[in-house]
Length: 207
Image 1 (cartoon, rainbow, N blue to C red):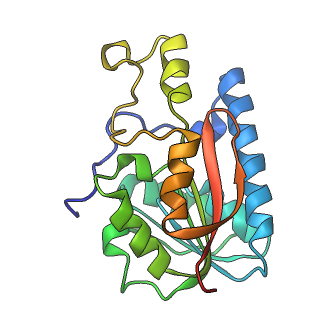
Image 2 (cartoon, rainbow, N blue to C red):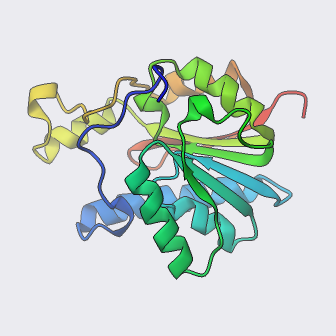
């Protein structure tokens, strides 16, 4: 594992299939925004999801015609992604790998997805450089929107000791701060702000 990544601690759960009605509504907003941005990343071609978790986003992309690969730092998440994609009849290759070791493993893809990862990284600028090198055209990125994220955690009685900070989150961006970071590396194509996230579709400059 690279020294530039902090393994998420204690906050892994199946958020896409949660039974909590409020959490379900929030996730539906996230997924709608994600698919809207993915639809803008034309033409459909190859895609790589870095930080694929249980493979939900990769499978959604595959169903719309993308030729998808995925990786995640957590081997148990990769095993679950493999199981779910096989059950869905989607031949997506997943492997255990973190963002800082992905360069040289994958050929550049038309779309690189990295959602709910950068808040865990000690050096997000370095990660963005690697993600850019893995993309021929577009990147689709998301992070929790602060301070809304922590306020919602506190409202549901979670992580009081850490003032609402989810374990493993070491970076904290408002919408504007995250866009400022992305604009240093990419041409911003479109932004979505479903509560409580910021999602950005960016284009590699010069492409």
